[in-house]
Image (tube, rainbow, N blue to C red; front, side, top):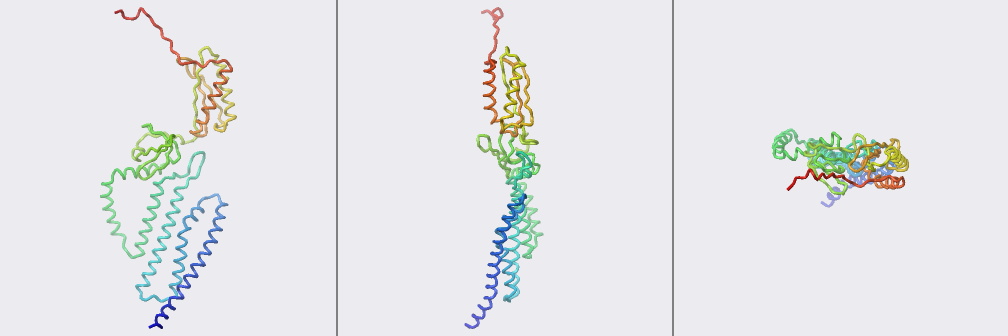
Amino acid sequence: MLQNELTGAARWAVPLLLFAGIFTLGIIVRSALFRALGRWSKTTTTHVDDFILTATRWPSYLWIAITAAIVALHTVDLPGEEFDIAARRTLEVLLVLSITVGVSRFLGDVVGYRRPDGPGETALASTGLLRTVVRVATCIVGLMVILGTLGISIAPLLGALGVGGLAAGLALQPTLSNLFAGFQIAVTRQVRPGNRVRLASGEEGYVADISWRTTTLRTPNNHLVIIPNSKFADSIVTNYNLPDPAVNMVVTVSVAYESDTRRVEAILNDEAKKLVAESQFLVDDVAPVVRFQAFGDSGVQFTLIFRVPDFDSQYQIWNELYHRIFERLRRENIEIPFPTRTVYWRGDALPRA
């Protein structure tokens, strides 16, 4: 009996040593290959190679183990055909599972990648909804392949899912409404993460994410406004980043009626050109515009129009611009009027007691 046990142990020694040797060699080759590919990917302009390396980094360990196991199994006679089939199906399932995980990670990174097309733009809307949909769809396909590998027919399962999906659709109508509305928002790309938007109901902020149920806005005060996708899709939305992130900045200046309007216009135009030449927050290839706008209640009003590269840049201009205009008008002895109103009182028109 002891001799039989030793014979059985020796029978498994060769496959185990072969598995350990191939696995160790595979780990060494994998490490060297990934280091070389990592250095090479840093020299390329595309990010696809980075996504492939990230997606295959951990599944590659399982691929090495599966390869070593397949080679080792060919060197030993398994006890029974059923055991042989079970071992090979297990390896096939692990292979499909590892490929599914890698593909899911790769597609999720591709969808989530934000490549700038221009100032403030992205080539693809990076949203939690799209990443989730892509990864779930990949996992479902992988699960169907695994079931087919195990010899399980998926036709009855698809039929049951169809009937169950109809019942779930009726029960989860509000949730599904938000889901499809969020998918529509993400796919149409009229609103993208990072864009500054204003809703007709008054909410304003930057789009932080578009998830399966809600769209999240980050306000300028660094608060989060969470809006159901169905309400966001039905609302009138102003997107300050599309079609071009550059916006016009409008400034109104009022001077006294006694002022020489043409002289005031020349002074404002001079200060505007100086500011454009010196400030990095203004588009220098678009000349500023100064216009005599209106006759106000307490003075005449002028409008200055600048082009800023994006919506936030105008806040960098307000302080410097008002300082310059105020100091220049004081040096030129041009009065900036206080809000006043002239009231005429006709005593004869008052009713008598």
